[in-house]
Length: 316
Image 1 (spheres, rainbow, N blue to C red):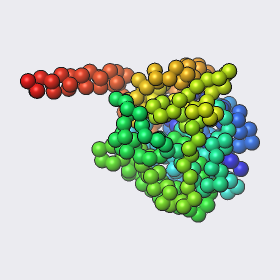
Image 2: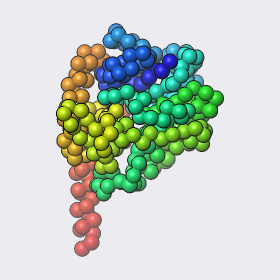
Image 3: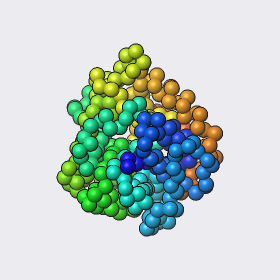
């Protein structure tokens, strides 16, 4: 049995429901779990989506984690714990697939290849980056070799040990703090190939397209079908566009570099709005309130310009 899952709180609930609809449309024989990392009970959602609340899985030190992390960080820290909980619940799981809530599918994930592997990981880049002021090699090194928003594994001794090891580290080492070597749940995936010898990185060009791909891959449309570097589009991650993402929200300017991606994002926004009727008010219930300003990017731009002016003045 193939099992898909995502994890979210109320901030990305409508995104997660849109993801679930795309998963079940393309994989009708699979199970889709919405891991709910929030305090309020959810209203009924569309048929086929199974809800799994954080209270139903055993996370030691959950209270300490909530006190330690901001509301957006706690969702990332909970991901490997939900994976462990689902595998305990489903001994018949043949493959577990995680997709971030801001992802949407256009084709079956199994078209990405590598199905003989025990662990499939998504590399951030597969060739040298093009020159850009928005994204460079250092930024990729800071956030790790692999994207934690898309991965697949076959349950087994090696992959279960990886999940145990990974989950234990998110108890206190899943902050978004690049200067101190932490990037949510993501950096620990660098060690995936160490724990699981039969690890394959997904190199299909149409897999997990997003802001991180625009500089390296070309998304095109032909007669209503979409291709990335001449391969079929499988999935897009819209992280950083209509909800805050601690890594990719700083790179929204990149969307203007591909008109097809911009068009697809506009269609995605329309889809997500269909699910906003189940959105919940107020701040997420778990984690510290982040209070992220809506003018955050504007303020960063102004600060950068002021810094350049002071440097110029200092030269004279």
